[in-house]
Image (tube, rainbow, N blue to C red; front, side, top):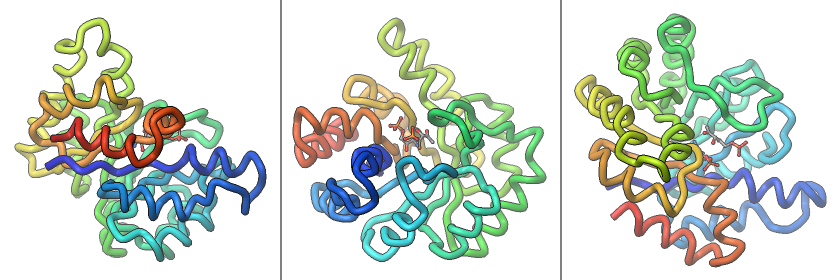
Length: 238
Ligand SMILES: CC(=O)[C@@H](O)[C@H](O)COP(=O)(O)O
Ligand SMILES: NCC(=O)COP(=O)(O)O
């Protein structure tokens, strides 16, 4: 079974347009998303706190009853936050502070020693660790050597190529997921997944443990409603 973790960054973006206590109520949205059937809540606090604020992560830790997945670059501030919150899963993403959104996976070959230390510290906190990376076999092999539990396949390239040639788009992801499975790594995926491209990825990657989806899901909810949208995404994963 592939779990759906809903990324609520964009709900925070809407709230922040009117200040920290404005509507929509982020915490209530997280509770409702779980009630509507999501199996996890994902947040990606960025250094400028333009959507998820560090305090949101602290608050969510007390109310999420499924799994809280906290994504980010393991800067000193991020590490201080996860030491305090001890999320069920930490997804390491090498994004620059000024990145509009995540735009690259880890170089697990060049940064293996660094990642190994971070993974060990996160394990000491009791968190499962996932490393965001492109679907490249050498990167998967090097990720395994860091001691990470999972990888998160960065699916922007898949999403971009999907309409033109979905078989070609998914091919490197199939190979990377299969290699991860052989190495005993769990496989997550995320970025730009939507109601068009999700079902095919799920069919093609039997190893897929979890997808984290935010931008498209929140945009769809404007038209379809949040409850209906969460259920439509879950249906793609059957
Ligand atoms: C890790 C990743 O793929 C991102 O998609 C992400 O968490 C979304 O971040 P933004 O909501 O800031 O674009
Ligand atoms: N890890 C990916 C994620 O959380 C959501 O990405 P997106 O659906 O907002 O592109």
